[in-house]
Structure formats: structure tokens, C-alpha cells
Image 1 (cartoon, rainbow, N blue to C red):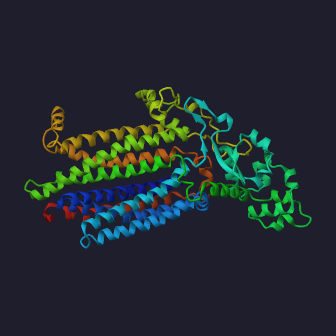
Image 2 (image 1 turned 135 degrees about the horizontal axis):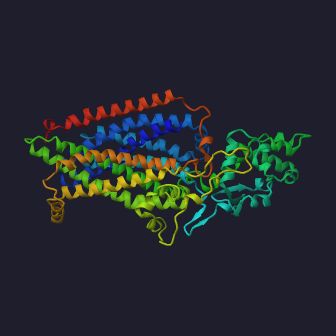
Image 3 (image 1 turned 45 degrees about the horizontal axis):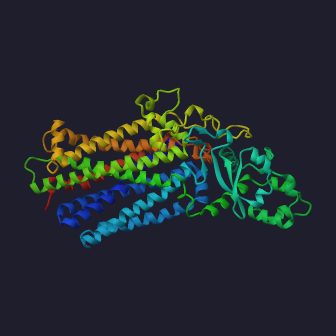
Length: 582
């Protein structure tokens, strides 16, 4: 089931990155044309716009398949998303419409509207793509670190698991709170954070939250819930409710008031027959209204870092791919090629190279750093796995010595301490009142340490390559670049080995991006929504058979083949030297 989701989502992400990067590069090329009136920039802009249109068409198909897959494979997760955090998903529809409208305006208006108008259209084109990404990433960020999450680790080395952390801050309606035993709740780790009028803001251990979510989505009644088993329901308080209070409570729980008010009925017995889902739904809806149904996902503490990192990935992968395309043009350039064509290709390659260097520097030093800080603070379990702080593995961070400087990078202080993977309780997410534990180990898989460090290592190599190629393309303009390249014994205007390496770099950039998503998603396990819903609750009860995996993989491979063929026919062939027109 997870593999099927990975195939669809990863393939869609591989396409989506170009939707984020190519329209922005088109916009920049149009700005350069408006500044210089050099037709080479207009030609480059048109080529990039073609690429954007092609990947958008295929991305729409893969996105539709991925969305259907999410709905079918993770029904409880999508039900929860649709009921409580629907707003960004709904707004993404308008983002998609914005993309489509300006995409068609860009394509069909190319020779019909002025260059300035084209630049405006391109601006709204990439803005629509970024707007779409910001909506989707807000939901994913909420899954990574939901609004109100209180982590279980402090940078001074204090572990708070024994106090019930991590906890989730929610708004508990007062008419529900008065029916609960406050002393027993406090003993279970529940804290009252404040009075919010019609509700109390409370912090509840995630092990309790996940168990209530599990019971809600498996049809458990209140009488069989941990709320009753743990003695958290105050029976005497229920018996003392007036008819009007019973009527209001029934309304809030989505029940006919006659059930609780029927003559001769026992209100306590009737209330205990209520599904846990109804009670939890009332609490969650109160929380969503309090936080803001339009803003709750955007208030995830990792959202800003996540969207910055996502856009950086799209720009970096797009840059390396365009760079590889024009490197291949230079490698295939005949000796007697039209000088105007050679000038255009060299100019485009130079543009892509400089753009790529800027993008990867931003991604590594700004967006990547912000993302690392957010993970360290709000996902300490994932951070411990990423840094390989366990004593039972070959830790690359210890081997390379990066564990000495990581406290400064992650927490801003050399006196800070990294969370120790071995000190994180294996059962921190398991409710002891439950009959059967949902997972065997609450910690993320330690294997993400090696994926993460491989990603970082390859990213550094990509950055060095982009810097080296920037020196190559600026050799004629910067004297120090020529001197440095001579020291490195790199001769010639465009060394063929370095040009060929650009093709490899484009593939590696895609690999690095995919590895980043693997760390993000696998590192959240066993959670689907961190601190709220585990994977086994989120998924379907009917996992797909192996043949279905093969069928879906074949579908996406066909889509990939169609895209490659379209790029060859629509972008590569018309751009050959013999097709060049000034």
C-alpha cells in the first residue's frame, strides 16, 4: 500500500518540480528580453514555456491518478482531511484553474500580445504554480507537525517523554470537560493551558490522542473507549445534567435529543452508547473553529520552512535539467554551426548555469537550514534518526565529525545537545490502556540516517559542480575565474567532460529531491499525521495486490514515455541547428 502511494506521489513530484521551476525561468528570460531586446532571450523563453506546458499536461494526468490513489488507499486520512482541514485542498482547485488559464494565455498569446504582456502572463503563470504548491504543502506540513504540537525534547538535553510529551494542544468544549474527571486526566498527563471562553485550551499526550482517533475510526462506542476504561468519564456529573444541558449536549454530539431525554431512559447508559467519533468530532471541530479553519494548516510550525524548501527543490531541479539540455546541445554542436545558433545555445547554457548555482545555494544555505531547524525543534524523533545518534549503528555523523557542529547548526548553540535515538522510548506513542499496541516501535526507522546523509553528500557535490560550471561560463568576464580554472587545469571554453557531467547532474538532482521526500515521509512513521493518526488507522482495510502495483507502475512508465517522446518531438527536434531561424 505504501509502495503504491510512493510510486504515484513520487512520479507526480518528479513532474511537479518542473511546474514550479520552468515558468519562473520563463519569466526571468522574458525580463532579460525586455531589458536587452535580444531575440535570443525571447527564443529561450519560448522554449522554456513549451517545456512548462508539456510537463503541466503530464503532471495533470499523474496528479489525478495520485489523488485517486490517496483517496482509495488512505480513506480515513482523506476523510479527516476533508472534514477538518479542507480549506487549502479546496483552494488548490482555484490554483489549478489559475495555472491553466495563464498557461493557455502564455501559449496562444505568444505572437499576439506584447512582450510586456507576455511577461505579466508568465508572472501569473509561475505565481499560480507556487500558489498551488503552497496549498498542498500546508496540508503536508500539518501532517509533519500539526498546529499545536508540543515536542518532547529540549536542546539542553531534557527529555519530556516521562511527562506525557509529545502533546497536542486542543480546545476542549466546557460541556464535555465538566463530564470528565480532572484529577485522572492530570494524572494521565493532560495539562490545562488556559480558558478560552466556551472551551479550555488543554495539552493532551499524543498517545491518548492517537488512541482516541483509532477508536473513532474503528467504530468504538464510548463505553468501550479508553475514556471509560481509564475512568476519565465522571458518571455523577452526567447524572446531574439538566434536560436542557442534555439537549444541548446531544445537539453538539450530533445525536437526536430524544435519545437522551426519552422518558424512563438512563442518560448515562445512553451517553455511553455514543460513538467515540461523535465526541472526538465535537472536540476537533471546536479546535478548528478556534484556531481558524482557513488558517489551521498554515499555522503548522514547519510550514514556512517546508514551502521554502519545496520551491527551492523545484527551482534547483529545473535549473539542472535546463542546464543539461543545453549542455547536450553544445556537445552535439557541429563545427560549421550557424554562429547565431551557437551564440544562442551558449547564452542559454550560461543563463541556466548561473540560475542553477543561485538556486542550489538558496536551497542549501537558506531553505535547507530553515527546514533542518524546524525538524530539530518539532520532530526530535525524526531528527535523532536523521543524524544517526544511536550507538547501535555505524553513524556517519560521528564518522565525519559533523555531530560536533550540528548543535550549532540546528539549535544555534554549541552547548546544545542532539537528541539520542536510544533514549527515545520505543512506546512513547502507545496508550497503555489499549488492549493491543498499534505499533511495535514509535521511533522513525533509523535507515533514514543513511538516506539523509547520502542526500546531503550528493547535494554538496551538485553545488560544487554548479559553482565550477559557473566559473567556466564566466571565464571570459572574470579574470579570477580563468586563473582558478587554470590552476585546476581546466582548459578550453566548454570542456566536453564537464558538459557531459551536466546530464548526470540533472539525474542526480532528481534523485536528491526524491531522497529528501523519502526522509520527510518515512521519517514521520509510524505516524500519518504526527501525534494524531498512525499509518495503520489511516490506510484501507483492503491493501492492493501485487498485480495492481505492477499495473500502476506501468501506467506511470507510459506517462513518462509519453513525456519523453513529446519533449523530443516538440522541444529537441525544432531546436536543432538546421531548424534555427534568427
